[in-house]
Amino acid sequence: MSPRPRKASDEEVFAATQRAMMRLGPAQLTLHEIAVEAGLTAGALVQRFGSKHGLLVAMMAKMSDWPRQFFAELRAAHGSPLAALYAYADCFGQMGETPATLAHHLSYLQLDLTDPDFLRYTSAQARATREELRALLDAAVAAGELTKGADTASLARAAEVTLSGSLMTWAFYRDKPLPAWMRDDLDRLFEPHRRISPPRRSRAKPSPPRPSSTRGRGGRKAKGV
Image (cartoon, rainbow, N blue to C red; front, top):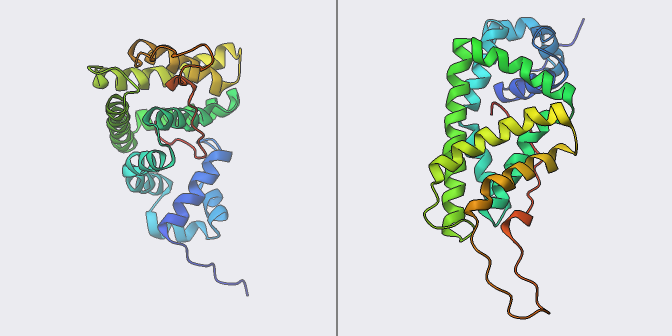
């Protein structure tokens, strides 16, 4: 007699779903594949979530507050607000580790944009992400990394546009590694708003490092941004 499948929490099922999504496109992702990843049966998932669609909607609802949690981790890990923002860019860029990986994520984005149940949570995550980006930029102004009076609301929107556009255009050109490509684009965005560096006191002492030289390191996949 086969052993009874172990129980798994919703969080464990959602984690297994995300692992399966990293390997499989929307057409290949099935309840069976998710169940195998989670160590359950497809029938158990049907009983709990009703369908694959129901499972994915439940997962997105659970992750609706993800941006706030993630940015809190970035702020805790980096002393500089701009370093935390660049670390977010590194994580965002993991969606395009290769052109094939980017295409894989874009296939799921199509579902997020066309299914009303998915779009509701995708839009909520996007709005939360923009609020967190603005909070980092406000902190950068307060810390003297950006000039006083910088329009952080406009800059937060511009940062979103820059990162999304940078990710796509890299796939066309591929002139350099993606992290460097994205950082260069962020540098161009923020350059007019950076704090003016103090003059050198002597030739023997270099000026303090510019904020653009601070690089964050991310270790998580960005989801839904």
